[in-house]
Length: 315
Ligand SMILES: O=C(O)C(=O)C[C@]1(C(=O)O)C=C[C@@H](O)C=C1
Picture (cartoon, rainbow, N blue to C red):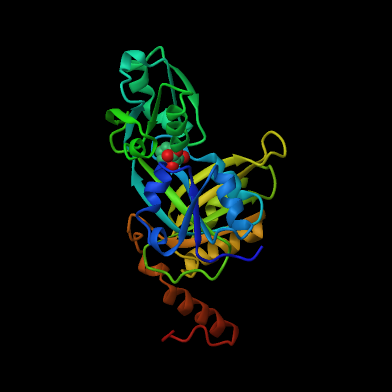
């Protein structure tokens, strides 16, 4: 199927936080937007060419990794991250009009949501039965259809599904955030902004002492700060893991590039997931000794050593 450059999909249905996050991106207006039922469905739409890009959640500040996304990125046809978006998360309890808290026997929402409202639920609805939905938008739809009495979702989902927000601003952790990534088929990497992130998945070469330390050392010796590291089972047997890593910097920054080269040499597999602008616009703590021109200067010095003039006092 030919690639359709103007379509963008997201974890749907309508009314998810992913849709709200997409609303903050230019792609919401430059592309024709359509929902997918699952993270896998959204990414397959990109792989198959029905969409140019897909927005999916990857990490929540309370629950951690969205494992469906990490696993999808580690397997199947490679995709790369074009952008990231951060969205503050606060839930509303959505009910069919007229429902009171006393009427609530069953409750639904995304599993990542459940982790963010656990204490609230124990306190206010200790006897309600929880059943997870594929997304919060899907949970709201199921309440509209009478499958559950209430759903946790963004307040904005109430209007979409003809529901009422019985209680708003529910969150066990008041500053909860979810991070979303916009994925596309691999292409030329965007130029560095100076506030970038690089993501990879790496499979250690062998199950041996120090295997993880060796992977970490490639970053550490080059002064590259890691922002996230997550182990995920490969599915090939107990104890077999890959590591999903976000590091500060861009692949064109020499320390990052050389760390990736080192990892490529010592791992059994490595997948580059992209270099992209950081949503929090945080510049890395810069060490002037690790600037690109310092790498060029030291490479030139080695070249001169080889030519027999490395000890020249002015070098
Ligand atoms: O279900 C949604 O509304 C989503 O967009 C998914 C998702 C997630 O997977 O983290 C997004 C934000 C919230 O943290 C809870 C659920």
